[in-house]
Image (tube, rainbow, N blue to C red):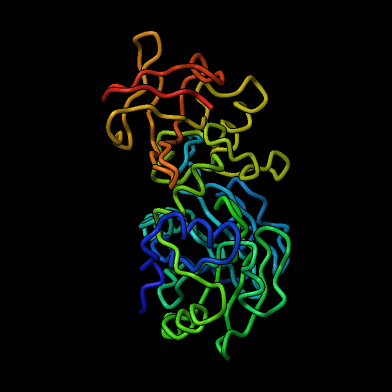
Amino acid sequence: MPEPQTPPTSLHDQIQAATAGCGLAERSARGRLEMTGADRQRFLNAYVTCDVKALAPGDGAYGFFTTAQGRILSDAVVLAQADRLWLDVGPSQEGAIADHLRKFVIVDRVEIRQLQEIEILTLVGPRAAEALAAAVPEETWKHAQVLVDGVETTVQRRGLLGAPALSLWVPASDTPRVCELLLARDGVRPVGEEALEVLRAEAGIPRFGVDFGADNFPQETGLAEAVSYTKGCYLGQEVVARIHYRGGVQKELRKLRIQSGSMPRSGAPLLFDGREAGAATTVVQTPDGRTIGLGIVHRRAAEPGTRLEMADGGWALVD
């Protein structure tokens, strides 16, 4: 498959494409699952924090798989189709999530499999729809079928990337041709992972496996849209609801402005009053030379303007 991630040499040019034009990124590192069977929505609704049961074909949602203790197993983007559900889960999590769900299948009419024959491309930027030359959903997480040079593609309005975006679910055998076609269109430029990381850090958007994971509760991520408090029971719901209604969590996601003589490592501990208060999980450098990041820090150190010492040297201001 061609490398849409082989970017222009300038990080500035990539970010400019993604914020003012249109960039193309290959994002199939995330896991993909398919669920079929008459009970698929009712079944999945019992294991994710978002409301899946009410989704009509063409709808979508973003949520978390949680443990019985309310901690995050993976994030998940859900696409509801007429006869199946597609799920976009954390990198390398498709096997673990499939196994997790199969443990609970007893008499449910549902089948779960890895969706290896589909790959995901993402058009990022305000001209993404123009690049497709097709009508696309305007509401975040909704999706529609679009022909791209004769290739039937599922196009979803994607959130949580730091810029307007469309995710294209493309048959793997057709992905090279679709990449080539899109990159040949006026204004479409390849965008790499580094540029996407800067975009989301600037927007304060955490990423599963980097900023949050199995040690975190949903409320610690700041991603309020991922949790429904009206949908009813799901695995871990009692703990998640108790946190919500009885005072919240002790740790919160924060943006960081970092001052350091060298590029800090991801995961570098953050200290407040000599005690560890969190970690700088995402750390990136912007084209204009600023070092910024994200971290989940303790409430006592989370006020904007708080200065946090970095264990590896330097300091960070809570933004």
